[in-house]
Length: 420
Image 1 (cartoon, rainbow, N blue to C red):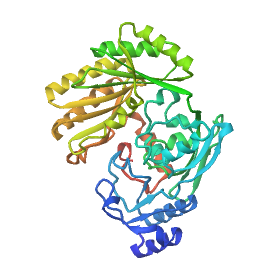
Image 2 (image 1 turned 180 degrees about the vertical axis):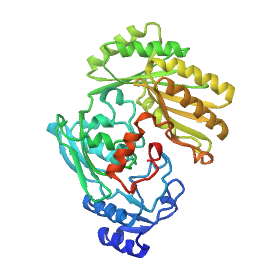
Image 3 (image 1 turned 90 degrees about the vertical axis):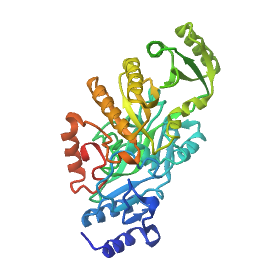
Image 4 (image 1 turned 45 degrees about the vertical axis):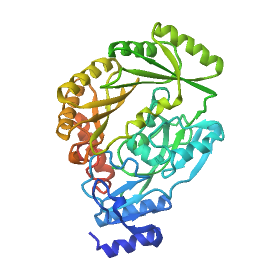
């Protein structure tokens, strides 16, 4: 390992003296303070920083805005924090082809603002768009209710450039929606929490902004009734954009459904919805309903646990009833936003020991039906809790990919599934 002074001089030469500094308390990653914070201004500088750290035996944690730095397991080491905030340019908006090329440090809000000028959007409703960066959203694979109509980030990204630990800038995909040739690096890196490479730019497929939109709300007095309504809507010919269910240990289930169309189309969709739900009371609602997932995070982070679960939509009632039983026997509270795709965000509130038991119950029950539960935020008292759970049969393959792209374990070691 190179001496501290030597590596500092090398990094300063790469990015300039003003873009290398000692870390502060705000730069800590899961309680660990890095030695330096380096802020490259180009993709080539990112690659050179990684190559330097890799040669020196130092570990690097990439960071965008830091809005999701607590996701995943704590890395084993953090020597260098690599900030992408200077990589914030929109490189090309090919509006006629419905694609955009953007650097990783650009915020989602800024990207959407530019696209809107041409009547287009990236069909992604990630958390904290004013802060969250493109690279951070990709690294965590964060998507919301729009996923039902437009797919997840893996479906929206069609090209990507990443800097590998050996200093290589690797690109895959293209700038046309039909491009599917070659090694699918974008899908591989999306959701890998920066353990395979540092994302420097991405190419996305775009969609037109809707002419009009309308949100409706309906309730149900039991989880079984709500599940029947949800499945009936999914099996119908309704052209809805999003469908979510909000429920908790203290309130009956409420569902939100979003339509995007012309005014005539919206009226026709509303009429059909009311026919499908029959006697179920349907009311117009505000677009604020789609902030429900983000609202789960506006709580006491020292006493609650937030996770992402996946189940079959047809298991919604069974799972929700189990939560009710467990909350009574183990004395905790819960609140959930369930997307009709089967992906949900769940917040648990209770004593630390109780939360440990509940997570075990969740995972043991979900895995039997092919589901999963990933912890995204946990109280400090549970800092050692594994975020991922059982990695399953794919762990050997994931380790082989990590070994192939990052043999020295330079990037975020221990952050991902199975300690990768």
